[in-house]
Image 1 (tube, rainbow, N blue to C red):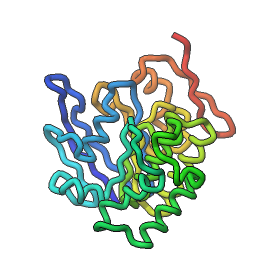
Image 2 (tube, rainbow, N blue to C red):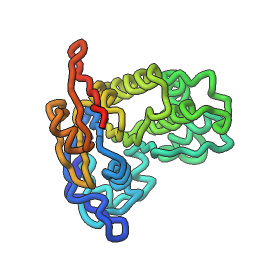
Image 3 (spheres, rainbow, N blue to C red):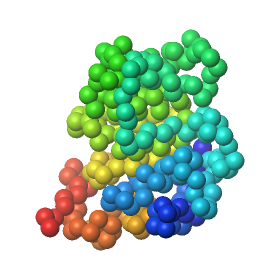
Length: 252
């Protein structure tokens, strides 16, 4: 699948939130969306998913205009993880199974249930399968919600801060699993993140947002000290450890 976003514009009342955002994302790639709080990262994901309706602009997925599709049709193609999740009284297994709803009727098939079991096991959630969501820690709940999005088997994943509540080991395991899923299934993935070092390690492409506009986009070459200083308003130094770039912010 191929994502093409053209000239997205959206305002909250009179304040511009997105201004002329355009980019493309190929299948098999993870696009990391980076920027300060309020830069437009979450708003961009919501506009692509049609939770928010932009004032103008188009979003094409494999040539199909998402603005012309129903929410159920969009859910067959896009798996979305919002930044904040509220637990409710439902088991982990049933919560992940809800990811299959756009594809099924009243009852899931044996194949649907096997798929749910597979996702739960691959994310190491097997011991929690019969626990209720309101009994989980914040990190456990976050992994369950990612599992639900993956259970949709979407063509495009939109993940808003998917590892913000996870410890370092679980962050790496989850992002590595996302890498494998994107590569093996040849899907596309957008991730809004604040952790720059995790973003650099697991991203293929990068989108730097500032004030609702794209400041820079491209591969790792755009992750440099000048761009980071301009976007974050903070000096940062770039070092290399075992061939991987590591960002160290300067104290104000």
